[in-house]
Length: 369
Image (cartoon, rainbow, N blue to C red; front, side, top):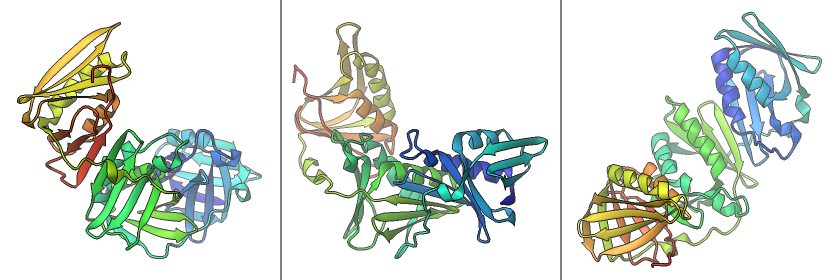
C-alpha cells in the first residue's frame, strides 16, 4: 500500500474514527484503526464490534493494500504533522509516514486481523433533515443511561406514530420525549445505542455542508447511518423498552413559568451545597415566585428566589441537582414551564418554544416531604 493524502483530510478521518474506539476494547485488535486503499478509494475504519465507523478520504493511491495501526500513536502523530501532503506506505508490517521533513515508522498489524468489515446495504434509506435530527438528539440523548448493566436504557427509543416519529430516552430517574414531524418507515420501533447516536450527532455537527442524514435498516439487527463521507454501522438494542408513557403526568396542580437563565443560576448556587447532601435541591413554588434551596448540615445552606408566573396551588418538591442542571443546560428557549402534582409525583418541564418536547424528572423523597 502506498498513498498520498492531505494532512487536514487525514486528521479529520483519524480523529473521527478514534472516537469510536473503546478504552477497554473487547479484542486487542480493536485498539487499532484499519487503513484500506482500494480502487474505490481510501477508507479509515474503527470498531467496537457493536458500532463500526468508516470515513472515506480523497487520496492519490499509488498501490492498493491495507494495514492496522494503533489509534493513539497514529492519531498523535498525524496531529503533529505540518499541513502538507502525507505519504503513507505499508512496508514489512509497518506503516511508514512521511510529511515535510518528518519521517516515522509505526509497527502495524496485518489488515486481515481486523474483524470483517462488511458494507451493509440498507434495504431502504430514510432521509432525515440533519438540523432537525441534531436538535432532537440534543434534547433526548443526555437522558439515556450510561449504566451498561441496563443495556436497553443506554439507547434512544424511536417509534413511528401516525403524526410522526417519537424519540424517547430514560435512565429510570428522568425521561426526555420529543414528538417529531420526522418520518420513518411505518412500523419502525427500535432502540439505538446512545453511544452510536452520540457519534452520529458529533459527525452531523462537524459536517456543516451536509443537509441530510441517511438511516437504513441493514437487517440482522444492524442499522446504518450515513453522513457525508462517514458511515456508522451499529447494532440495535434488542428487548422490550419500558412503557415510559405511563409515567407522563396527565394532570397538574401547580404550574410555574420561569426564565431559564435565572433558574439556571439559582440551581447552580444551590448545587454547591447540595454536593454534601446527596445532591438534593428543593423547589418551592409560591405566589409569583420559585425558590431553590439546598441544605448540608456540615457545610451550610443556600436559598435563591426567582420570579415566576404561577398558577394553581403552592407546592414543594425535591430533585437531584445534576438532573436539574442538565435539563436546563440543554433546554430550548428562554422560558421553562414547570408542572407538578405534589411532592411525590414526577415533575414536568415543557418549552413554549418547542411544544413537541417534554422532560420528566422523578422526585427525591426527603424526610420533610
